[in-house]
Image 1 (spheres, rainbow, N blue to C red):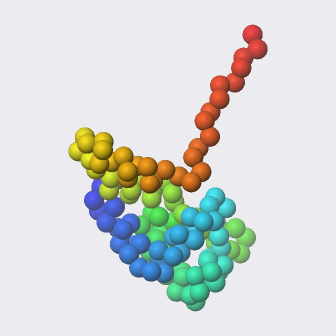
Image 2: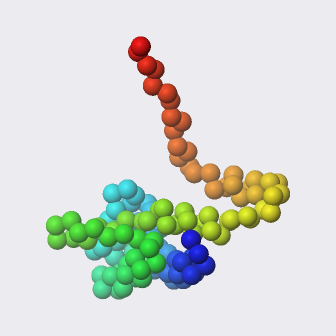
Image 3: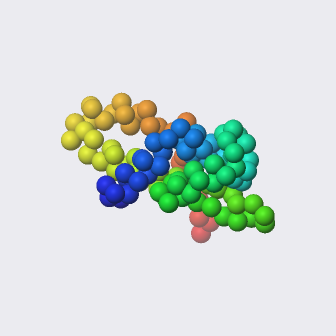
Length: 122
């Protein structure tokens, strides 16, 4: 991630409808949501939503996949994670007491399950 990519992503999110749409797409992960339904949920005309989705797609924050007659959009959480990490890179300059509250507040509501080793039957 470089500054140009981060600025493009942040600029794409710096508008109310696009921010709402992205947040809604995150809510509908991993299945995604059709553009028309997203427009309805965000209470904007479909052509307006198409323009917003195009901007989010160019910023690599959203992916699109044609499914029959619909286009299903999904949040590109990997790209969003890269933007967040770019912003937080070296956030504390080695002072963990500064970063600890930030990291704690970023802990997901659904932490990943710990992997267990499969027992081998030798």
